[in-house]
Length: 430
Image (tube, rainbow, N blue to C red):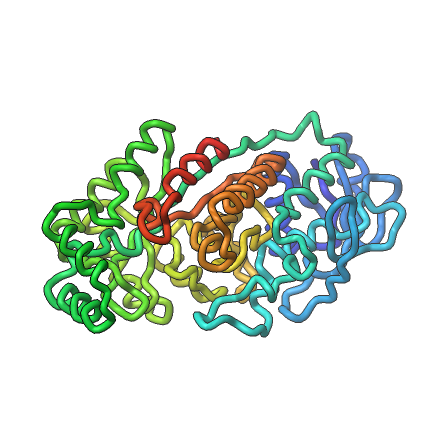
């Protein structure tokens, strides 16, 4: 397909590559040459303020021709069964909004560069997002918009359809609840339980430490069993940071933890789970990546932030500096849904430098803690919520990435029944 545009910018090239190249699998070329466009006999369209003559035409707003970052007038409106932004007023336009600018705004996370109130952990909140405010967070609207564009362009015969994929992921914040904590942490835990009168907790800890019971966080055999049974290819994100208020991992110096990491690496891909404290310390982040790499004896190229704590563009810039190729943080802790409006992988676009990068961003839509801790859903309602998300992802041939923890799959205390729920999720997702 040949596409006539007024001028070619980084934003424009990135967006058209995402829409046509990545999502639709259509070869395309951008041109500003009117004569070349007029003589071209294949598929073509124009994008800009006005059509050339009677060719397929999409009216534009200014966003993809700009370089600055400032508050945008989105003007949300109803479009079929969903919402859209950046309306355009032209009977000639393929769709009644600038689908390319709208897609770029969400996928680039433009709104996260603007001033906003952040939560206690410094995170961009879903309530601050335009999708939440439009009631569209539960829909992969960018993918739906692109499907509609393909229809009006009659691309059915040339589109190379993507296939739906289920990608399970595990965050290992702490491999064990009681074991391998070391003398001082264990003694401190006993002292705290004695002061609080937590006698049942003391008995439970004793049974685990004396090997009479399985550690409640040690669900790894169960995970490996599911991987074999359902032929899953999960990704593990392992916390290798030092102990701190919000970092409760086992010391990387513990032989048991190192052996577990190697065992996991034999079964699945492994990425870094940067610690809470590494959020503001590039040196600490680098140290943690090097720790994991030395245990695995291979390069670490995948990452997901602990507490899903990130700020654009700093977090991604630091990952790129450490040769991280794939990040899986793009989602919300407190809400289920599609933070970037898509269920598909995209390259991080650094608005600060106004350029596309090599970092692949893999958005997830559901985390176990979101359902349990933020939304206070029971087992049945959690499954219903997840199954609806899975249906939405399947409709757009996206990738359903589910985030769970080894603690959750231990199935004890507040996570009772969740291992059985996870099996149901797998069966639904597959």
